[in-house]
Image (cartoon, rainbow, N blue to C red; front, side, top):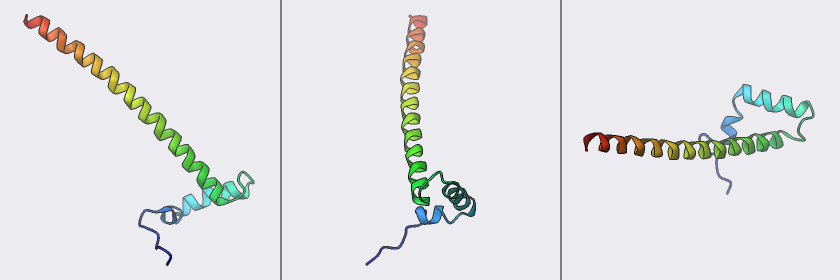
Length: 80
């Protein structure tokens, strides 16, 4: 038995005319061998972007934590 696509699934995203045109234009221009190949590359780029963003946020949180700790120490010294 074949499952129905879930709401928000890939079939739904390609139902948007702008996205479908974009993918088809890339395929027709010869940039990709198929529309599926274009979508796979887009998803790979999205995954790379999310990994980079996660790393950036992790580094930001480390720096923020260090700076907040310094502020806490400054307050302790001011009270002491």
